[in-house]
Image (cartoon, rainbow, N blue to C red; front, side, top):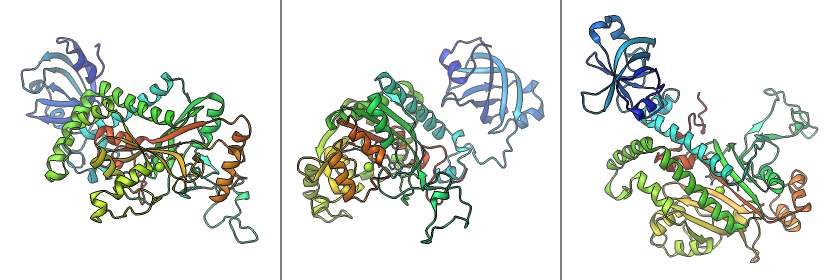
Length: 477
Ligand code: 4AD
Ligand code: MG
């Protein structure tokens, strides 16, 4: 009884060893062959039942989804499709699964159907592969930063500040329904609320991370963030995980280098450590592509795409250069963009980002030096007075993967900016303190973890790369 899970057994492949294993039945055919999965790998192990010595009742209870425990011997397989199998000497049904009611039948289910059964969908090949890759990716995130001298900092979930100034926050309150006290002006009196002020779920840990960078030098956050934006797209969640490094004495060029090196490193890690799952997801995507019209099919498979990103430099382009490319582009001239590109200063929409990445450059692109008035207050103003040291990393099929900036480290400039953008200086007194005491050039970025998982696994909808997606009108489970 040496090996304890399917992944280890298949890897060792040593026949004649005694095996004890617990897992779930994927399929059971000919009253003899169980495909058993225990979650340790995408691969099932075939368990061959000695049906003459197994009771009728037990055989009936071996149904898709049932939890079982088996003992037996590993043997070379006679059949096709696997090199080894387990000759079962003992079987015990641990948990029955009523075949008529079990939603996860051994057939293809739509992702919509599986989303409605998010508590069970991880029992399918696709979702178990995605979630194992997600787990390995998050380990790779920590590994990258820990190996490079960063400190992991846990920034608050409940906060009084809107870091992005976009007003898309979920309120946190302990007031009971309709019982919130009001001030003389009839406004809700948050001074009487739990925290004595108005509080919300954080949209980003950046501002607090900056305070730590200004003492620990290199820090990163990796935690949940929340946005009450009513975006029903394949790339938006109301609750998602963000990775935010922040580094003292680093300028925008260093920030671009860091984001590129970081992304390549974590992709390399999963290419190395998730081979079976990526091979499966690669096949899955190839099947999906086949059902698309020729013109929309990608000319690279999933693993090639990942290797392409790892092996090639990201293209670095200023907003102004990108603006010119877009203005002179065919779709703009033929009025194919929903938002035409006419005047310098317009915000780029995902149709523009995708044109740049997928049609024009055909590789990940880092756009930098955006117009000041379409970006957040904390970004460093350039000498031209109209652009800021912002950067967005754009990915094929995803659009914006990373948003970051060199931060405004000059007290006076920052205060001016906050005034102009109606950001409450009193609320952010502590953030301004950083510019009063030992201020320094510093930069950082935020990477949406689910978008990274999406790119890595080739999944089309962000709701399918997080266990229990939170989106408008949906917080089941
Ligand atoms: O560009 P954003 O809004 O930047 C910030 O929040 C900065 N404070 C980050 C920083 O500089 N430390 O968000 C960063 C990234 C986006 O590029 C995107 O990948 C992801 O977070 N993101 C979302 N992912 C899923 N669902 C949403 N609703 C998202 N909004 C942003
Ligand atoms: Mg952004």
